[in-house]
Image (tube, rainbow, N blue to C red; front, side, top):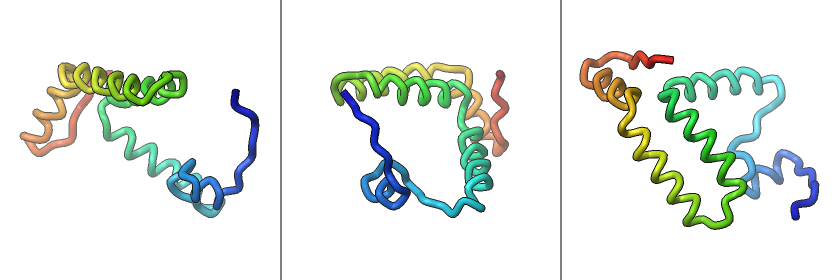
Amino acid sequence: MLTGRLFDADEAYRIGLVTEVLPGDTLLDAAYAKAGEIMLNTPLGVALTKEGMWSALEIPGMQAAIDMENRQQIMASFSDDYQETRRAKSEGRPPRYQA
């Protein structure tokens, strides 16, 4: 059972809970920039990543989590998004994903 614990920013960075610590006045701009990076990925890929991250919290073993991620990658490789990504790259244009 997990118990509550607070971490300051430096400790959270040191133990790997966060990948970056920013001053408060730059945080919103950094969040928008990260959201922009995420939006460059396929909608299916983002959805599967979010699902995998939440599921990994409850999966009992590392191998089971890896197996699930492998299945998700195979699923994504057969999607229309994947095909559009390949076409866009070969045509030198940004991908246009269907919502």
